[in-house]
Length: 426
Image 1 (cartoon, rainbow, N blue to C red):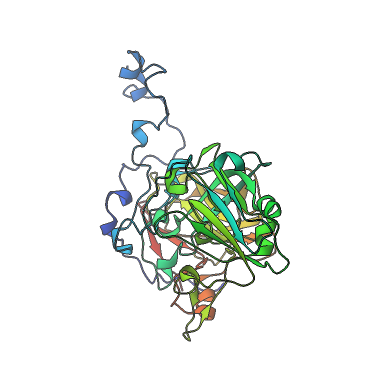
Image 2: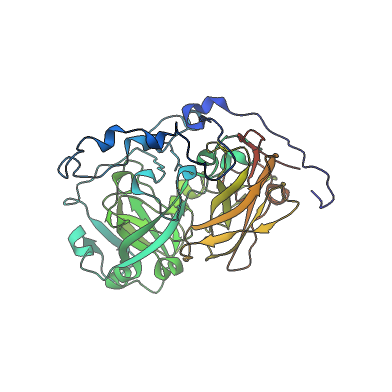
């Protein structure tokens, strides 16, 4: 699209109604003003039940949970994406969140053999292979090592994968929801490798999971020593079972399939193993039939979360806040631009909150909406100078055969009535 294009052409606008209640628009449009003058019939003058009766005491909810009015803020799946729930994925409700930290109960799940329920008293971590001293650690052994706290994003390489061939899933929860961002607490992997003593020909490590799929991936030694964590807590509490309790590997900035859950063994070797998840899966099939391999790093990416198909505009015009998230596996996000017209013109967004290495960043753009249709896009630039590409630019290089590493710019079509659709522009 050129600067002189009169109007972006929408190439896909049909809403996907099969996704059900998660996409319901709901709610009547309200006035465009940001506040209303007090009126006699206003609800603020009515006496509400919650102001007349005692509520639950402190013993009623020993583990806190959200308000009943937030019951729809949950992970959701798309039934047709996979054959069976035990080898499937659900999605973080990005459109319902703000800030940069994902609540533990909303972090997306990806399983290959369902959720393993592991007894920590019987769980062990072995380090073997090309080491001077093979070791087996209990959970208590691991907690005696110096620990670190870091906030990192975790993104599945297949996030946005269904969008390679065109607009398909109508909601940012489904197009971009295989990502979350939490604070991990754990032991740097390099401390454990130093304890075992890596032999001079040890150039790779292979973590293995304790679940029934026995997940394995090859990781180069430089990354293992640089910033990998053996984590046992997230956001201050123990890992959730679906996130690998009691132990998982954290591989900052690299694709989520390498973050092996229920971690039980780390083997040191002199070359990559080329196991199932790095041969038949998690390689990027190109147009000519060849595949890119070892595409570990997650490139800079962003998405507008509000407004979006599951979060329509509920006012007709006036003061409006656009917000979204951006992240990069190579560092921090230096800048995010927002377009209201499908990429013809770009305006700088405001990044708010902590700007942390290999972490999600929150951005906002505030403007006066005149009620006319919009084609919303966001474009991130990271600390290396890398600029998030358009989908057309990605396809020109890699075709549409892959389902991995799609970090192309996303477009939302905001209609005059506030409804939003997933579209592409040309």
